[in-house]
Image (cartoon, rainbow, N blue to C red; front, side):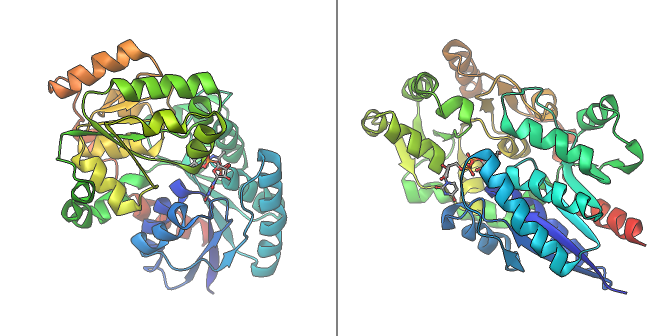
Length: 365
Ligand code: UD1
């Protein structure tokens, strides 16, 4: 009998995580895999281009929830996703990452007695001011199957008393996606489109509420950008753009001669810029993995990370918004004295989707 599995995606970092799963499920003729898009991210540059780049099938359903406050967004996803589950009656729901769509879909499925699999389980920043931290913890409580990306995740789950029979250390699926698209990334040379020279520019992505939602914090970020010794390219997230406008800081940023403010980049384009840059300054989670894969020095503009493996074995360092530490790290990186990624990190993306799909197939037998 064919079994239906729904993978739920909502926001930009989710799309890359289902690519390898969709491909791998094709090996199982008794599984009907479909994608449901909550619509948490809706701009073409935050969503549509990723489906194109990753060759993902069009979502079977689009819930069209859009943006809003946390409760509103989570609530809307729950209302709409419950209707989809009652209609499609899937045998299992896969949720990925830690965005509001992740927790909303997991809660709906579990209350309808539909088993839940969480890809990227166990990650913890231990920072309770981060909305994602609650999404991570609560989604793991609700999940029957927990696919963990790095060793710290297994320890976190154990400490929280989660039923470990459902937990499996599989590696980081973002790195598997990256490996799948590596030839396209390596030939893309996106820097040419912006007149940049490889290893002669800094790439920046900053969008976390802790860095952009308060004026003082955002000004500190701008000061750091002003201090960088090379050209800077900054694909700007809609949240950051809005805050710059709200705080009247857009003019100041536009005046920076060394800064190129550009639209959010598609998947292959962004990774091409990452491969070509000398340093990346970022507060993103997944970028820590991707930078480590390419062995590009990554200054993480956060006080903590839920992905410690990329600071321990990768090319990442937490710098917060500390100007001195950032300056010192930039100097080290440009002098070739920054910590290099180990092979352990480079191998974390091997056969991740295979391990997950085989385990789900066994579970549903
Ligand atoms: C969300 C995730 C975050 C992830 C990030 C990646 C949560 C709690 N946060 O944060 O973990 O790193 O996505 O991008 O789920 N907006 C647009 N167009 C869009 C999407 C958003 O203009 O396509 C605007 C919204 O109007 C909103 C702002 O950007 O004001 C923030 O969007 P939101 O989805 O609330 O959170 P992110 O900051 O994107």
